[in-house]
Image (tube, rainbow, N blue to C red):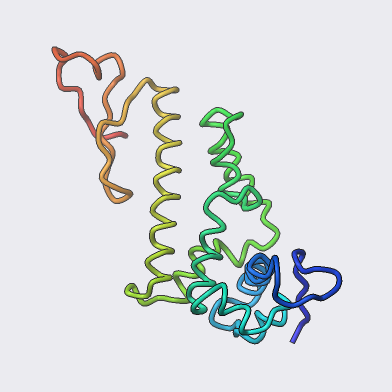
Length: 192
């Protein structure tokens, strides 16, 4: 087994105590990414985090709770490339969309993919709470990406999205100059 060091563990090797939750999540981030969720055992997680099993279970009822907290950490994590790019307000929508692809291409571990999607694949049962959480994260990410795209469409082409039923649906767009007028002709049409 390869030794795992976590950036959050104290130099004195203290176990439990203040910061234990953070060390557990830092270790989970490293181990789950490197080995996978199912391949990482509680004992290995505790050893990497420098906590006892008792300390882990004080902070998390189950391993699924550790996984859920791990996934929640990616939602607005500025060190996670997709979240960091989507959160940038200094870039126009077009530049953010292009930067998203650049950030993903620069990923040092491209074969591991998205931690959220990896969790959904490893815990494939749709009824599993972690799978449902991963699906919800994916839905929110897709929504943020779609909103960014539609902002780009509005800014560049002067079109407003008037309905969007999800990724499988074709958004209906309307030229902006007609969208606020009650007497305008019906200009709704599927986007090319």
